[in-house]
Length: 493
Image 1 (tube, helix red, strand yellow):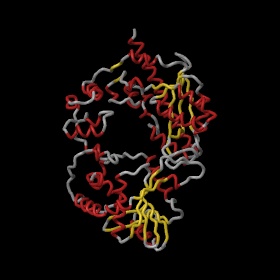
Image 2 (image 1 turned 180 degrees about the horizontal axis):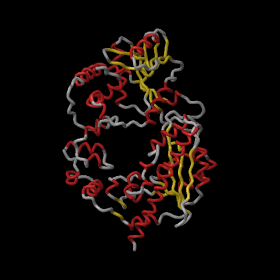
Image 3 (image 1 turned 60 degrees about the vertical axis):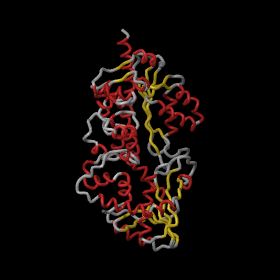
Image 4 (image 1 turned 45 degrees about the horizontal axis):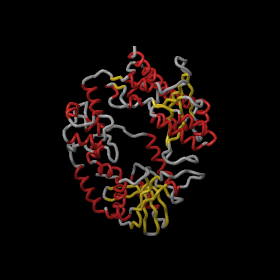
């Protein structure tokens, strides 16, 4: 078959994945995150400048055009060529960066991660195999990945943003192994009937497989892969022992927390509410009471000073607050302009809207606290106020994380996306599915970035949808807080 480096890597993870992608594409799930894809593309584009001026081979569906353009570029004795394309016996690859020095060549494969992974070695080994078979002399073969410790100060420094790992001897020594694997893949792909490969850890490592739902379609609807919080390795170990139905899992030696989830769902048990513990939690909260939620995005290639790759950059927050018990609920919100560093603006807005020494609630507060601490470190003039907010935060997640309040519909999770519908199953105003355009944090990140390219009514529409999504996050917290109070009141009378 016609192989590319991505298909080769798919087959290296699981050959059935490649077979299904070739023969049953319609059963594939879309598991890609657009922001992740965009970041990967951006990293690749930026890395093209790592060695200065370069010749880029433009993508063309007609691969022969890319091969021809590469041949022309290679007539230059000293050249840096990006996306240089080669083919050997139906094995095609585009090399991210190819450095030519007379008759010697250096290959650089660019990855948008912060470390070297085994699958990257296989990726580069495949490329080196193709070029060696074509008679090219490989002097150096390296993986290029993000340096997670790089902090931008002034102009972007590509030499510091990227780390280069020389693995020449390793990938050249893999040549025979690659050839054997290619033969194995081609033989496997001749199967007319769907192969009967079983599931295993290869379904999620190194990447989540888009065919996992299809390959597990014959399992009971309640199975081990629905257990929240259990390590994947433990799930697959139990599966291999034929212990995967809820009934079988109940008889097995697993954590009582997992058994609780199973019992509640299997036997349709009534909610468990420990009002004493919940009241103890509520007693730690004081008025005025603020409910805070951030939306953030990540930049793998930092655009602004004092940003490092993968740092959470806040661009939006919602804030509901109650001045006293029974007070009218009030709301404040902030959404940064999209073409500038949002951090100063958002920090100023926070200290304006949240007074010192008040109790601020978040859901999973470690996230909000980390965002605030980063802002405090960045802006010394606002640090005291920001750290005061930080130090007075409480976590609304606690009663659910400790399962002091638990229902079958939470499915073992204490994520607000599970807790909210389990507490309010019939309230459309609290259903994220009823929102228009933006329904979750990933979509919020994507649409915020998309604002750069929008104008007029489209811009206003997306901005409004972002605000409404974030507002629901904190309004949901208010309703959950009120529900906890209500349960304690009812059960204490």
